Length: 137
Image (cartoon, rainbow, N blue to C red; front, side):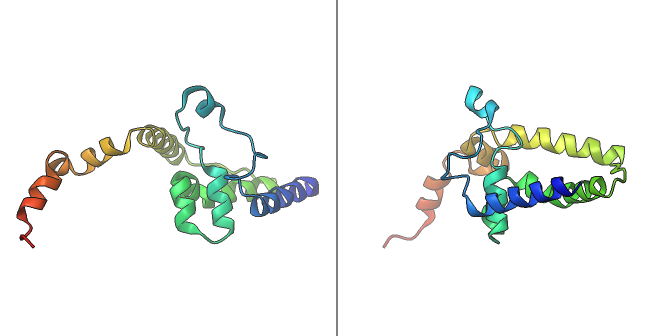
């Protein structure tokens, strides 16, 4: 158990010191390499690196799902380290799986399409109608 703790501490130290965005040290996502799509875990290392440096907004930008579920993951790791069962209630487990699936889908939709979903009235001609309503200089 001590070896796992030391290994985890060294991994966290490495992640703190070496930026995954600039170093070729970390593995690339196989799904992204093969398809160009981002899986629910893409951006996790970069997000954790920024979180370790106290840059919460940047961490959320890389992988919001990981940052939001980090307390649950920490609880599960702590329960495993204390050799207690980390039983996640079934409804929470299903909700997490659905959230990961939804996150994977939404993050791979082009940004302009997401903007149209969120603001359908702004999808066509928004800029021109707004520019027409501005007073002339």
